[in-house]
Length: 213
Image (cartoon, rainbow, N blue to C red):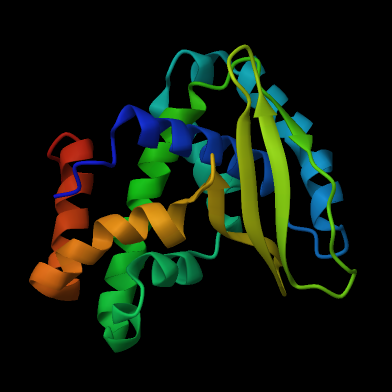
């Protein structure tokens, strides 16, 4: 079982990452430069979260609906899951890959939803962006600022036919898929294979849902 998912440090990672995802991927627009896109949508989404009394009071059903509608359609789950699983992903069957994506998505939706209740006075400031107009795979660097310490936040975006999509997020110098999740998935895969990882993720999601299937 993954003991590090819900540690305070991991929660901080996901809180910042979910804020970034909500700010950045609320709408797809292939014509907008990635940094301009972030600036354009961040204020709108943050203001929505701050002004919604249900979200601020912790209405998880409404928060999950917001995440599902405005964030998750703009995440490349196939690529993110492949990065987190690492080399064993190549040997997984199509059915295993689909199960992994489904369970990983459920985990992220639940964690992101909980983290969004922590959005209070944060703002997102973009750092200088260096990329050409032809680039389809970029890193946008930002900083999340609030009453406490600022949080370094970088994220990898790819440009697809449906718009810019996220496939990894770097919080405080740690890439979530390529470092944090991968380091947790690796020992499970090593000891019990892809099916063992699927079972562990499913059990974690069931436990988070209160034991409901």
